[in-house]
Length: 215
Image 1 (spheres, rainbow, N blue to C red):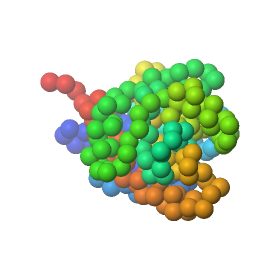
Image 2 (cartoon, rainbow, N blue to C red):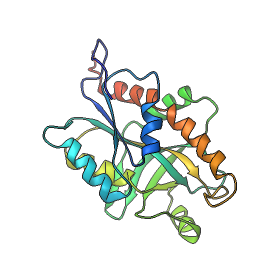
Image 3 (tube, rainbow, N blue to C red):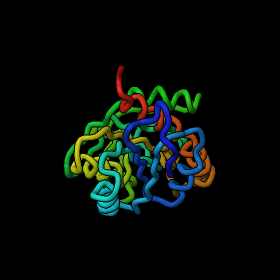
Image 4 (spheres, rainbow, N blue to C red):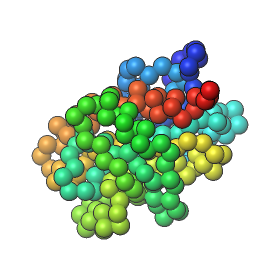
């Protein structure tokens, strides 16, 4: 999805990558985000994310785009609830660590866009499968605050195609005290969907603040 470039519009496009169709629907239905924004559904898992992002950032695509990995995640920290936001300071997986750009700008923009919603910052770790039980505790012990399957692969692939701002913002749908297998899953999922619908204006604010030419 994109809009016309006018005065004050970013000079390069913004790519928001997510895995699931429901995430894409939520992000596309967000309001108040002018400018060139493309929401890409990659499919589930790190390999799917790598392939989809590589295709779009290659020749004939959006080679200069800033990239945000978004969608849902599993929270690892006690006290997290469905609908909480996670802004990654870095993403991690077996292939390494990717620092994120402008974390503070994103936190401030999301706080304005979603007053009253908790925003957690810290490392976001990657997995190639759904994480449960003891594995969740082990990831938390590593310092990570949340886990998903695509963010680390998305940002790493983006930087393999050239320097650019990258970030990861996820909405908690599954947390230690609110696992998906428990009663309340539907309610938690609806809460997370509503939050994801509201994040796009904050993404655009991040994009604009980092990429506008400075006078």
